[in-house]
Length: 158
Image 1 (cartoon, rainbow, N blue to C red):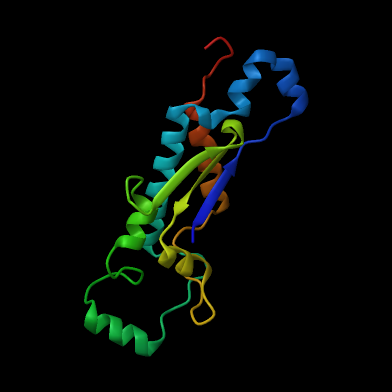
Image 2: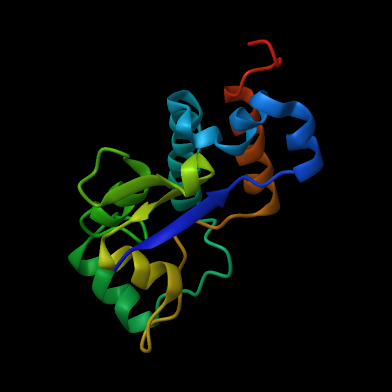
């Protein structure tokens, strides 16, 4: 089971026609290794920040019984951490549970975790409410767009 974030870049067809050959740079930004690397680095860092600071969207507290059990069995570990594998799958692009791929001719970047526990936390289960590891807020979406723009050529002649 994989849980992922898809980032697809779309544009104005008329602008792309006017740009001619240079439009390919805009239509397929994730073909550029630097753009892909920068966006993945930002997402990994942001996921780590959200997890560390406990900014998990509409976060549901652990039940009192489970909170006491976890405190006893895993003292001083953050709420979403027992082994660290779930967090690593979201924050370490080299993790065995992390994936990213470029599809749609370079227009879409998909990134996420193949570790089932990450999906359980992100979406919840029948018996457990969602406790998202990563939430795409407006600020996060804007920063992803800025990061991508910074990685693309600044002028048509570049």
